[in-house]
Image (tube, rainbow, N blue to C red; front, side):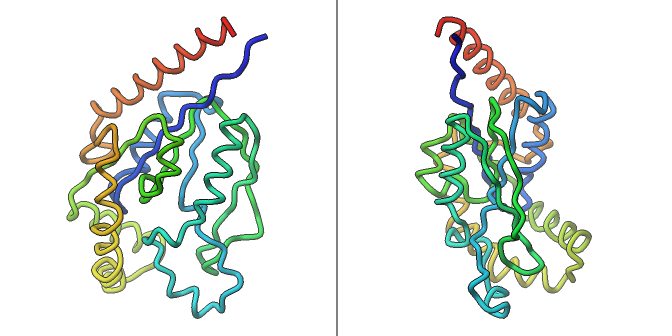
Length: 217
């Protein structure tokens, strides 16, 4: 009887507004919904229900300490073992983890997307392909500014203040250095169709090879 091959794990890192989501979406368009699963690191912010609301407001979401990587790693290992997980949901309004969860089934390809997915060596060790989306700072701040004003009702002043005091320092200290661990660096995010096509083709080749190997197991 054929045994299932271990899912392919692709890590997609990069600064806020770099185009990680666009790259992920472009890759997903090359495959069916039954083939690919997206795991967002943003869903794994730590539970802060034990803290007063005022303290939660001071959370630095761009710092490695903000993430519950232990839970994320545990869930990835379950998915790699072809087991379903209960994926957490983060409540940004209350700055803590929601009581609701998402039931997620394992798939052949897992894309792990997030600003700091290449920062934790334990996560890196689980990846087959490591990607860093490298976009100039001016484009990243413009994208973040437009997103936060449109989707989160933020003012220009509040977005720029957060960028200068938190986002930029955290990017330089923690995110930018992880570029060295990437197998593939994609400049300009989702607009770099050549790089995305090459990455998608590589995944297709691995999937085809896995199917051939499965015939003989």
